[in-house]
Length: 354
Image 1: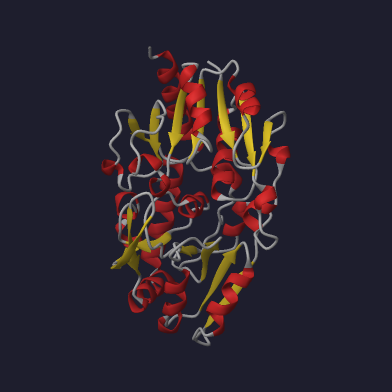
Image 2: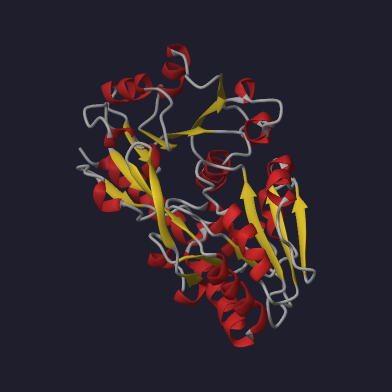
């Protein structure tokens, strides 16, 4: 079997996701979609492209690969894997015409088939989370989690009794404050325990206006950190992660936190409550929604409730010790070492199927 990967070489979520697939599954061919030319000068996410991650890859400058690039990529392949998008349905049409099997590891909010079921279809849809899984009506679909590259993290060998250094991954702000940064800032004045909260983001200026009017108690130290050299460096020197995510879907920062054996405090909403320990979750309230490829429900973390959850992890040794053990166990269950054989079996089964 010869298979190809459609990848990104930037620091976006898709860049990290596809790079780890490349590193752990060793595709025979790679097509890199290089979006550096589209980036705003201030936009870290797509500006810094590192093509050295994919030696020998075909590279398309811009979002839509040309017919010549597509044909060169498809030649000799039995299967293609991509995350979120094929970038052009011309590529999928040409693959289908050649009877090349195709896998789309989709993100529900960007799944075009929810709006137009008549579009060209891949052989298999792979859901990275169970969020809205049963709303996707497709003849061939599976739940295929995104594995954790546990080998790149260095968990604290001597963790404290309670969490006092928290991380909030702001990342690159998405629509409707997806990671819940505003909700965390609103919770700051309600926190009762001395602690440090580090906000990590790709553009620190996105936090200037938010923090300018924030009420920060004297016992809470707020630190704003820019982009780390490597994504796993964001999780060094912290004890737990606060992620008041406002709607569901794949959440790479949650996976990465587990890789560092860090518990992740998240709202008790789908899909968080399908796979994270109940002690890590707290109630959230519906707060409207928005239209993407389908309607997306949005939730709000109430300041007092979120602050109480943070204080619990900062004051309860039994809770925190148990949570650290749970994080380590989840990391093992979701590691590439554990899940790579499942990916390979799915690839082989799909290619062997008539």
